[in-house]
Image 1 (tube, helix red, strand yellow):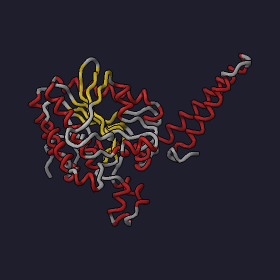
Image 2 (cartoon, one colour):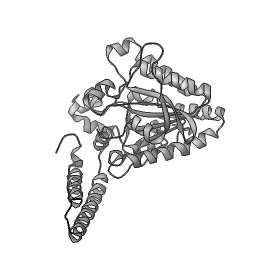
Image 3 (cartoon, helix red, strand yellow):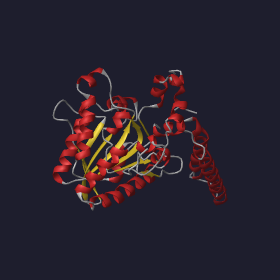
Image 4 (cartoon, one colour):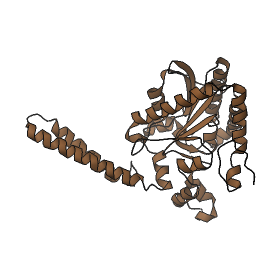
Length: 340
């Protein structure tokens, strides 16, 4: 089995192949109706086996399994969701300072007949596109492009929908020279004061400052098998003596980082976990997109009816209170006044 997929998917992929073979055979000419009926029964039985196996496997996922799912090569990316959820997407390019960053997409689109601004990280499918998109690691000009579109949205009264999917921001010398840290910091300031609703969806990896640079919002959600972390687990293992400074101990670091959507919600870092189709979003991208769209539309309707002054006050309170519950050994919803 190809290393393209995580090890725990091997049996599921093997059943996929068996089902596909039988389906192709059942469509061959010259088969009797009796033979076709037997093949349909075999296919239905294999699908039941696959369903049972998938439920069993996914009931025992580890934190590292969640990391692998969040990074899955077939997982839907930002532009996949944009195509499935929005109409008339008009991509805007460039930061009006340096250039255009393909790792960050931004533009205007229609959602249920209303204009919205859309920003998000974009990874690539094949080697060529991954290099073009810089593996989803945005550069300073990417964050400044996102800021430009968010300012436009505020000026025109459009809400902002942000899709987060990055291992981390670009950290090489040229990005440092062009002010990557400053670009992220400016986005945090901008989004904390932006006078329009902001809905954030973490669709895959939410890594470090690269994620938070477009993840400050009024309602933050993450997909069931996405991850949201201050640092990738391999980097955590390299930094900490606890893991022997060994990147191969990334799975142990993932457990220590509590990398699952449910645990992230327990900490109050995200407001909602969006369910994925059985087996992950890559198994049924259309169903995953429907779930994301429902959550975005539902929360956007609520936020649109909230006065801007209230939104800004709640946004401020939410981010000032993050981490207090954990420090105090307590948990509570974002914005709760928790004291040690």
